[in-house]
Image (cartoon, rainbow, N blue to C red; front, top):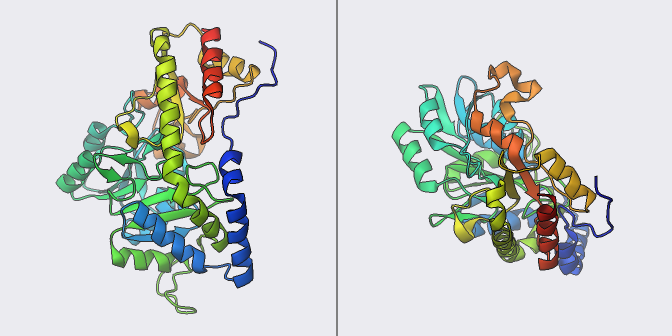
Length: 379
């Protein structure tokens, strides 16, 4: 293995964006401290409204995390025990956990091998009389086709719940993430394109009744203090986190554009390596892809094994990751769902091929070239 160098390209670096806004963030936090409205305070309502508007949705409901956003959305839609929800096998496990917490059964389907998104042909084949919802994941920052989702939902009378946790302000076919389905769930985890300084999430919807129900569910099932009309929970976006997000939100579009431009530079620089088995995940959304992650496939044509490539890059100071190394149906805790190795060959193959390269606002041309040069030197 090559000797480690001091010139490190981090996988994610949040400092550039935070240094840009440090004074405003500190003032926003101080304002909350002065008001003392730490739970469901002024900044929460402001963020809910602003993020909904930016996403072309009517209502926002701030919650504690993205997993809660999925579970509460399904519950508010009346989807639970005895109902099936179709989800991709290639996603972070939180997608499944949200479905299971709602009492519903996740039905997994395979991925498109080129985009890594849910395979909509496989979705249609998996629909049964028990299917009540589709839960597409806008993975890596790219939306699943809104027109095809609506067509399927209309044909089979299904609810669309978007898992948009990696797709803040992403666009495709003229739609923004969060405006396609009946409801949409977002994570506001710190490393997301729009991230808090801790856990957080938000639900978007166009339905006023659902919005009211979800606000009740997140707050102990209480539409007013000490009156509990629903079997709710405690899942509220903290006011301090909302205040921070309010400072960051106006800059999100610019940060997303930066990410897209970084991806275009990666694509161009890596193009000569296609013949050597280095294939970027396909972008079918153009500038609407917000690249939460930039992911390549290390295929069988590559002369270097993915694990060796990953280790050698790290030795050269290039941090990287795998999103995700084990498909959901092969995770030990979810064996009870009854799936076996070989059930979803595209998702399983992706898990053996994918490699996420450094991607964040502030990543410089020099760093991009350093990453690419390191890959070239190894293959």
